[in-house]
Length: 395
Ligand SMILES: *Cc1c(COP(=O)(O)O)cnc(C)c1O
Image 1 (tube, rainbow, N blue to C red):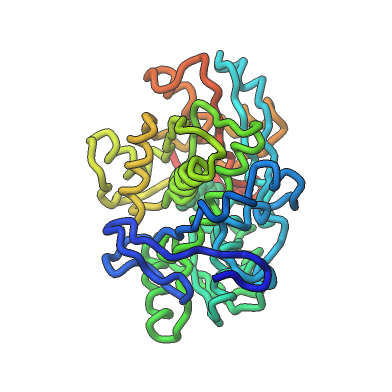
Image 2: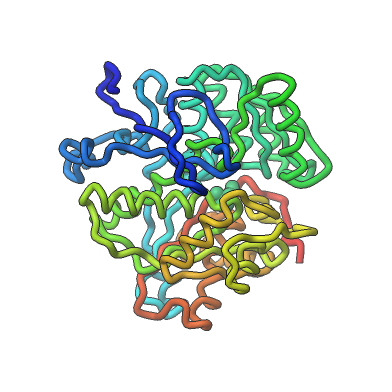
């Protein structure tokens, strides 16, 4: 099926647990098996006109990859300038570390100052296209800003539930963007319960990470961009600050799609997860050799994006780490803060603590022999430090 805009959208959704095929043209959450759903495309069909050359002169946002995005009507593409963030050569950081090359992809330059914009741009565009009227999200902060912004742009009502210790700048932003903001004395998992009640009672559409199929489609565009910005090649390693893991799982999906499109070969970067020492469920599972993670109790870190005690996509994260030959490490808050400063001095980027965490992981990864001096390493600075002003390390 092709609409009048010539966009095919997805052919179907696929359960990441059982492989079951599911119809894509109605609002949906998890699969029947309770697992995340992945959008699938007719890549053979698309590949005749969707080429590396054809995207080169397109809009400087994530919609340049619209053939591999689920939205069918251009009128449903909500645009605030998301994606196509700069890839910055952090040569002073590389020299400091004795590593051949370090790039930083600066996701702080997205519309609401974090890479959550990518995912929520797609999730809200698609919710609009499929007829949702009210959307809801539990958030540690940045996802709430992004949901509020895209819902406002789409003319949809947004309900955002966040912990009381969310940074003030984010709370003010969410309110200013017209969302219904609820504060809760608890963690993001507790906020999720409130959202679920609203879903059952009031018919809200739940935008929780990986509980609807399209945030990951927005996040995967980071994988396409990294490859295009490097002249259609991939770095040796990607270091990703992991909460629910959408970005990492998304990039991994993007690499597979690009291979099927004939844009890259079978080479892949080593994928690394970085978590906070005070909340490291993926690191613990990785070190134990498990293929799923147990919920972390007493989660504590000032990097609010990493304060995620349990993730529905845990098995997908761990699988990507394993298949890529990468791994997982934890860093303490004070070390994140130290590296936010070093990265700032080295590059001119004021990184979020989560971005600082990726740089803080470098000496550990080198020390453990998980990367080496000859590698070209890409760090994801997932947000702007401006959103965390006043927040202090908790260890
Ligand atoms: C949400 C968030 C993360 C973690 O992203 P996931 O997709 O949940 O793994 C990392 N950094 C920042 C700044 C975030 O807002």
